[in-house]
Length: 114
Image (cartoon, rainbow, N blue to C red; front, side):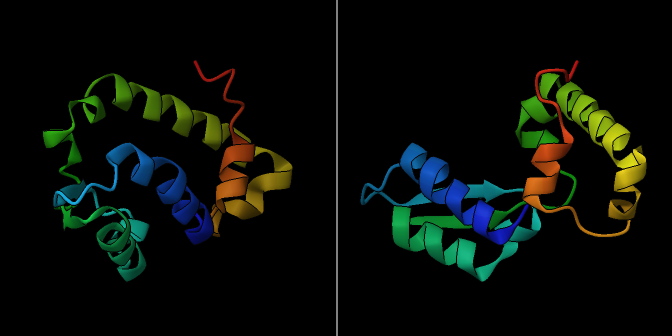
């Protein structure tokens, strides 16, 4: 995702969902690049009094059962939809570059992911 979109997600979803009580919190993060950023860690500390704890790479499924069950199935379906989009002639060049959050969202017809 793009840094700007990530910060919007934090301010509109993560922070309101966690709340900003004085009680100290821990957020377990799964090593997505943005979650490793100093900006994310500082925002969590300053906005919601939370410390970010980074999980080992490829271990999320061990503490987040959805990543091993129905969530995994959904990720596979979404990845297949993105692959189909990337294989379209107009999108072949995007295989070699990073996909912006906008391109990612545009690539999936969310109503047809089966």
